[in-house]
Amino acid sequence: MQPDIQSLSPLARRAVDPGTPLQLRLMAAKGALPGVTPAEIILVLAVLSQSSETDLAGTAKQTLSVLPSALLTGALSSDLPPAAIDALVPYYGKAPQVVTQLLRMRTLSAETLVSLAQQANEQVAEIIATNETLLLKNPEAIEKLYMNKATRMSTADRLIDLAVRNKIELSIPAFHLAAEALLGEVTAEPTVAKGYDEIFAETERLAQEVEASLGEDGDTHERNEEGEEKVKDVAVPLYARISQMSITQKIRRATLGTSAERLLLVRDTNRLVAVAAASSPMLNENDAARIASSRNVIEDVLRIICRNPEFTRSYQVKLNLVVNPRTPFTFSSRMLPLLRDNDLRLIGKSKQVPGAIGLAARNHMLRKQGK
Image (cartoon, rainbow, N blue to C red):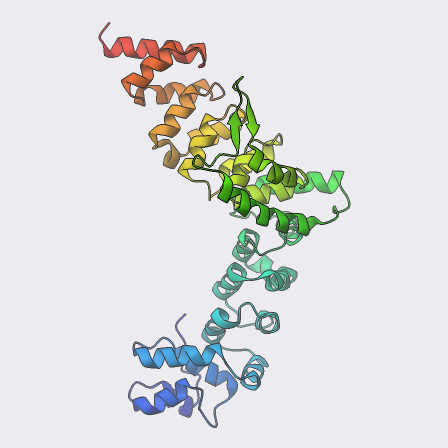
């Protein structure tokens, strides 16, 4: 954010004037500005921290990071210029007392509020979430708070509820799914389950451990001799932990969690959860290929993968979708001509694919051979 120096006193303006001797400006970058108010000192530091002169900018940033408490308290006692607030956020954006003061300032910009929400720790996220009036004026901050992993699950639910009650459309993955699930849970479960946030936090830790233990293929499931999918032993504890979650918790884990969590949640019996996992912005090509090969996911999940051009550029994803009996024929038939001849021959002979796909593969090979 570009600082506005026109409101500065003559002494403060001189401290940021490129024509002022460097030695004096370096003193100002250290906060040594007798006769200048704390608020002006913060703005001077904000200006100097953006200087093209490396030493000057570095000194100003260092000073901003360790401001004397008296100076900081004095500066926070009144509205700061937007650029001064913005300069404080990287260093004090996780300090609850400072953030509380910043949120009260009428000069706080929407851009800075969004930045605070994005980098907030648990305490700060809770403070921001209680400022509903401010959030309703800046829906993007609600989105950043929801997507911030440090935000409590109970707080994330409140944010969705706030948006729904005020008819605000949020641009977050699975917003409608989370809203639908939350409304259903309010009707069915008037009280919050014990350990609501604790379950969420413990799952985070366990998911990281399972992720590191899954092996080369990285999938949470394996097929038995009958071809049925079952959860791998290493993923069973995570599966058990996830089963204790509410629907809204599962949706948020599906959106923000690890690959292991998504590969479990995409197979969830609740459609809202499964669709949220398939729609996660963190879903990668390898996850998509594993999901495309799973015969234990609902059609809606496979439709989402089919409609994602980023994933269907992958040959393995296309092949997995074509041979998966659960893939709607409309999609698998469109991808069939894009497969290699040797795969088409195998599909044409396979008894594991739907008859219509096998027939389509054989017919396509005949057409290519001019028969």
